[in-house]
Image (tube, rainbow, N blue to C red; front, side, top):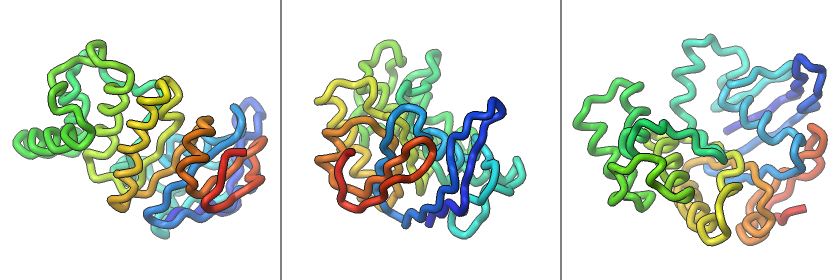
Length: 225
């Protein structure tokens, strides 16, 4: 369970990104965050992975107040999460397999386990034949598949995605959504910030609408706008 309790966030510039957010997201839910640029979607995601701390209020995951975790515990807690970005953030000097495996290297897993898990995860995202390709050799959709594989290989229970289809054509966007939907069906909580109205309208999942840092609508099986 994820809970935002009285969350507000003001940046040093004085920009108010979020105002008194109170939300609960159940384990295994698929939630869309929508709203115009600057509405607070990315800030909300960044509070969840503790890249940011709230100005006031608390964020709870499984009854743990992550807003007050020490730096060491933050690193440990982030292993429960995967983050997928619009611009992929892949390491250009590493192959697809190496980009994915680096997560397990950081976690201290042995080489045999890393190789096995990387192959399994590449198969899941449909890239077994591209494991030795570098990012520059991959299409945008293939790069996003690598990014998704990297996000989930460590066993993340929560997948945060920030405009994961923003740079992709419609056909590729749906292929990526199919993968993300399959991840959700396995029990992973998915929270996706998006501007893609077609995807939101077709998926008919819970939709949380933000405007100027406030939740103005929160509906299950909803549509865009």
